[in-house]
Structures are given as C-alpha cells and as structure tokens.
Image 1 (spheres, rainbow over the protein chains, first blue to last red):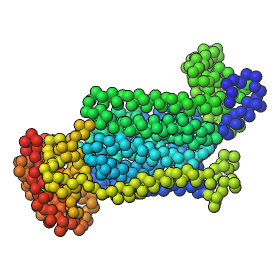
Image 2 (image 1 turned 90 degrees about the horizontal axis):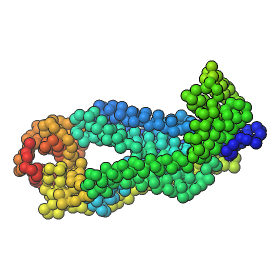
Image 3 (image 1 turned 30 degrees about the horizontal axis):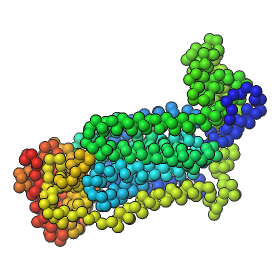
Image 4 (image 1 turned 90 degrees about the vertical axis):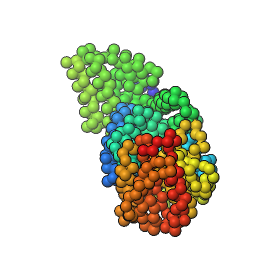
Length: 400
Length: 211
C-alpha cells in the first residue's frame, strides 16, 4: 500500500488496486448456504437450540404478557434502529453485506443468549450460590458470570461467521462491525427478556410502564452495551486468529478480548464495588462508559489504519484519470493524524465555483465509487461508470 | 462466476476432507465446544453439586426490605437472603426466595404492587396457569382469608397441578406484593403442612404495618 500516486504509473496503480481488493475481501458476497462448511451446521444448531428455548420460555405467557412484549419490541426496536444508524455511519470503508449483518444479528439474538448464555449463566450462578453462599452470590454472581459466559457465547457466534465468511471478514474493522451486529442482536433480545421479567415482577400489572422503565434505564446507560463489548471481543478474535489481511497480533487480541470482559464484569458488579455509596456507583458508571469509548476509539484507530490503506489503493487510479484529485485522495485515505488537515486542504483546493458543501459531497461520492469498484473487482462496470459520472455531475453542478 | 464466488461455492481440492471444507473445521469445533460447555457440561456439573444451605434454628428470611419470615429449621435455601446476611451492594432481600425440603418447595416472589391481596392472587393464578398450562393448574375450593400472627392480612387458595398439590397465598405490604407458592406431592405436602403454615404465619413487617 502506498501513500501517494506521484511517480507511479497507471498499470502499477491498477495492480495495487487489484491486490487491495483481493487482500481486503472488499466487495465479496456472503453466501449463507454452504453445506460443506461445518460452521453453517454449528450456526444452525445454535439458532435452532436457541429458538426452541426462546419458544418454550415465551410462548406460554405470550398472551398474558402481550402488552409487555409489544412494549418491549417497540422500545428495543427504537434502540436497535438508533444503533443500526450508528453502525451504518461507522461502516464507512466497506459496506457489510446485508445478509451477513442479518445472520450476525439473528445468531447474536437467538443463538448466543438462549442456546448458550441462559443455561451457562444459570449453572455458574447456581455453583456460586452453592459453594460461596447466597450473600456472596448476590453481590458477585452477575459480574463473575456474564463476562465469561455471555462474551464467549457471542464470540462463538462471531467465530462461526468468520468461518462462514473468511473472505468478507478479514480485518479488525470487519470484526468491530460484524461483532457489533452480533452484540446488537443479543442486546435487543435480552432487553425484551428483561422487559417481560419486569412485567412478571410486577405480577403482570402496568406491563407497559414497567417495560418502559426498564428500557429507559438500560438505554440511558446503554453506551457500555453488548454491541460495544462484542465489537471489541470480535476485533480481538480477528487479531488472535489472524487473516490473510490482518497478521496475527496476540497482544492486541488479548487486550481487546480482556478489555471487553473486564468492562462487562465491572459494569455488572458496580453495586457491590460501590459498597452502597451512591456517588461511587455513579462514578463507576461514568468511568466504565468513558473507558469503553476510549477502548473503542483505540480499536477503531488500529482497525482503520489497514482500511485506509486499502481505500487509498482502490481509489489511487482515479487520480491519473482525473476523477478525483491527489488532495481529495489524501483527505479520504490519508493517515488519521493528517486527515482533518487533508480534508480542509481538499475543501480549500476545490475547483473554482464548487462550494464547500459540494466538495464534501464529492468526497462522499468518491467513497461510493470505492464501494462500486470493490463490487466490480476493480473493473469498469455500469455502477462504476455511474459513480464517476456522479462525481463529475457534482463538480459540474457546483461550478454551474 | 468470479474468483470470490468460486472460492465460496466450490471447496478447493486441497481443502476437502470427507466432502467438507477442512478450513472451517477448527472454527466449528471451538464454537461447538463452547456451546457444549455452557449448554450441557456446566449445567451437569452444577447438578452434581448439591444444595447444602439448611436453615438453622432461629434464622429468618428477608422477604422484602420490610418483611421477614421465620424459616423452619431443616429447609434448604436455594435462593434468598437471610436477615443475618450482609451484602456489599446493600441489597437486603432477593426478588425470589426458594426453600425446599423433601420434595416440597416454598417459593416467594415479591415486587411492586399497589392493589389488594385478592387482585394479586388473581394475577398469580393467571401467570402460574399460563406457565404450567391450562390442564396442569386447577384451583381447588374457595379463596380464604389468611392473617399472620403479626396481623398481615392476605388471601390464600389451594390448587392441584398434575401429581402435585399446593397453595398460593398473597399479601400486599407497603406497596409490595408478596406471593407465596407452596407445591409438592400430596404426601410430602401433608408431612410439611405444619411447618409451612408456621412459616407463613411468621410473616411480619418490621415496622409493624399490617395492610
């Protein structure tokens, strides 16, 4: 990967583009039905076992808790929608195939919690209570169960997806995004369970109120959520295993996996750690939320380095053919430390008559072009031609 | 068909093993092992470790933050906090108490509830009926008043469920509903009847309120 196109001839740039698309797996399609892939059968087993447990738990009281279930679906749906918008925004380098996102969400929502986490949590919590007493278990069982059981359960859903989509999931950034979809599925289905539990604990009276109360509490503290933990865990798994694009880095992998588990554990043990002090509890809540965001930022930074290099190589041949400028390429795919400066430079050096806003649109359209080039394997296609024409139209419209 | 599609749809010959994609096996084996650990192995291990936390003479259960119950010695605590338990979090009562003895189980569920004990009993029967199934839960006899020694007033109803018999007794104390279900085979229930009655009778609010 290179940081400039100066002095490199077009055939060489095209070769680098092809290599970048090959290495990154950008544009690769995801097929779920791969009967010869053993991961498919493990995935299906997880989902079938999970669906059976979910049905057995929810079906008998579905009518009785209909209001709670509807409120839970609605409130969890709002949370889900907000997070999906964020993921769509964060997924800037390569669009995760929609089918893979759905499969990750279903695996995370059905397979991980109901086939693995529910029996595993129950058994481990029972063991704590049996061996260490009820008072100890009351304080620590959640914090010393969920990080091990739930994080590995979600991590295994990600692992089978890695086995099913080894070409699509190649980078740490892929791990962050696909992991977040797995965690989002877990979070939404867990929120629905908590909603029904809260209705159960109020004996079925004021179901909507009790569900919304739970929803507000969980959403207000929702930054440190399953989606974030699983994003970090999955990115760690990519580092630990290594892929054709991402060399194995055990230290970083362990750091991310342990960070996800540690933050989850501390979050679930907050009440006990605070020892009854409200201020300490609030402080811990803020500390974990900030720590989560910092770790996520670090992981994004680590992951984005590779992605920016690929983006550079995919778009570099568009400089000699005049679709974008060298400055615009730097603004899109330059080093993070220089990106703001490069972006400002691209806007400052815009063509005569092109507004600042229009130049930002040009940069966004260049990203679309990169996606289309990845989809076509770097070759010219109808979509690529349209994307180039769109960039020309934006410049022309701005100048006109 | 592109190279990528070929990769996904046809397993290269050097990666085939009994018709399967050998590269997928390590991922699948690890994921299956974790599934087996959480879904089957750990629950089996937990089953091998017996509950061994019997109530000793003089011990009481903290049913809600305000209500306690003197438990009969010999009953095993599966879930719930004693009045003598101290937690770091400051939690005094568990959402659910479960005590067991010789096949009989006494469970107490508590949560916010502002209406009458009779209304709570209706809700408890609805939820239990739905959970057990219509054929498995049949109320027996009339709803009766139940007043504890400390003056807490509630209602109670007998039921049968398959081979088991039992009762649901409900109280509402200071905005908290308390549902006590006792269930077990008929013979065991008869043998434990006196202790069960004494436990329910011992239910008392610490501030002396008696809704």
